[in-house]
Length: 265
Image 1: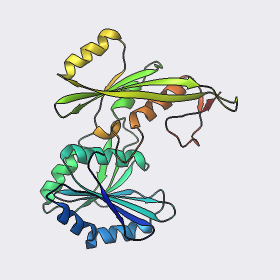
Image 2: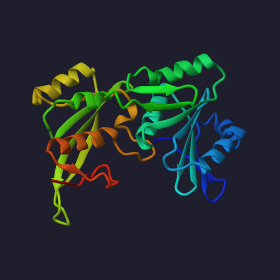
Image 3: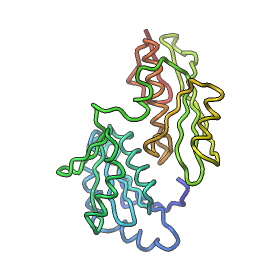
């Protein structure tokens, strides 16, 4: 996250991070100590690991609430754009079991519906207005899963997304590395990012000219491979697991590092 943050603790277990613009620091600070935020903190303190994350949606600001065992709470408060909203929802879905609680704090119901439609227009996303819960549909596949379905295993992939007037490209490659225990096989997904000027079509031609069978996914959600709050890359995680499974190897689901997937026959 590029914006400068100001953080302060409300208690030993509750920390708030503010990302103000020059003109809205006072307004953002008032929100940080508002009744809404204090009620959200109380909710998060009572939450369990498997409970949804929270996203409070205001006209100008987002409040992203997270809870960590046993009762530690962290909230980010920041101004946002449409892209930023999509980004944080995507990160929330990936971070916590594909479940996030969206709370409408906007002045207009119509404005909130328009904002929510930025996410729910994808066929693998569903929203329950009765519970305010948004989640991925397990009976539908997101863009990268659709791309990988039926494809032979390949150890590299490109993800492309629009980044302002430039095109962002993430190049990811899977490598095998030695096992310390000599049991099973270990893999890691490494990569780098670049930005290019020009059209998406011209960039696709460049990639395909080097490999006409290249795996290329055009990102439906900014958060797929972007980094917010040091979250891991969703695309690399999906790609790595798909690759290992197509080698007919068993994935060690107990491994908590999404970049390293020990596997054994």
